[in-house]
Length: 422
Ligand SMILES: [Zn+2]
Image (tube, rainbow, N blue to C red; front, side):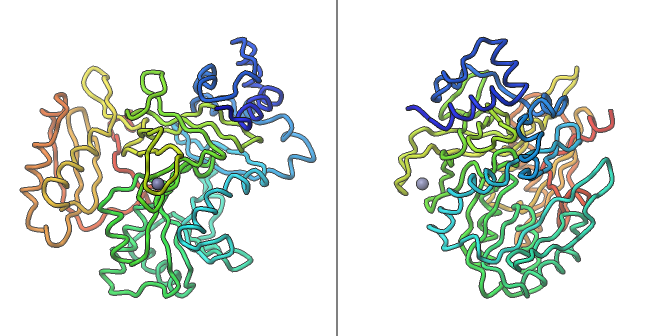
């Protein structure tokens, strides 16, 4: 099936963006021949590192000049080397790319752009300095109350929640780890839920099923998962039947395994934005993993492909002997199996590689499982499938709570301290 908007953006990228012009000339690709999923395969993959090494090459020439310069909205996204990457959008494209998500939000939960909501925002860094020091932001129209993700201690989160309660929003837009901590606070401190709250949207991190259940139980409102990135905005959104359908109106999704697009098989997620003209992203690796189901036959009636997200980032890896590397998602599997087998005792976890063959496993158990520490440990060790990890040393720490990184507000399930030290 021909996708007109694909041909449009590929042709635009060829005419206005150095990188695409050079690449298509070198490969002898006619931009007007990229018209559907099959022909998309002619284009090479694009990785964040390539953009980071020469960001100017990826920005449309039109947007480097007046009057288009005044239409730019700038976002920052974290790069692989810890340096931030600037993402450019035309503010009109930015709004347009969100239309289908807003339609679904409205259809499923009666939530619209004029409804009050709360969220947490990322601080901007320049080098190591924080640019925006403001810890709380309220939009001029009084529709949004947001909190900076820096320094999210238990006390600060408790204070944020109290402000959220007084603001009384219709919905929350949160990352799962922060929503999980807010649920913990509400339960522990016996706090009430904002009376107007109707819906919670989760995005920005892998959503574990038990975390979702807990958030639903605590706040007593429907919870939906949304998958997106700064480069393309919303990519997939969960329907009422619990399936993440791709928002195909403005983004094409591919799952790549061994260099080829695959269906019903796990691989790396690549996106092609049909909306971002200021900085076109064609076959761009998001860093996340998933499975694409072309024809999901979902009871919701949608024929749009389903994206099943998998835990673990493509760039998170464990270092083995002789510099061999394996993806850290094998560790998420151990936690998932343990939870499945034992009735979900693990509320939060974080695994840190401290050295070759040495790991620290931080676990937070649910209250009713607090005496099960040795059983959980035993089960974890039994569930290690990867041969090369079976002889490693695993140090367990049972703790009360795991907070997001105090500097960035990001929550990491896996940290490779061994590589960080190098
Ligand atoms: Zn569906």
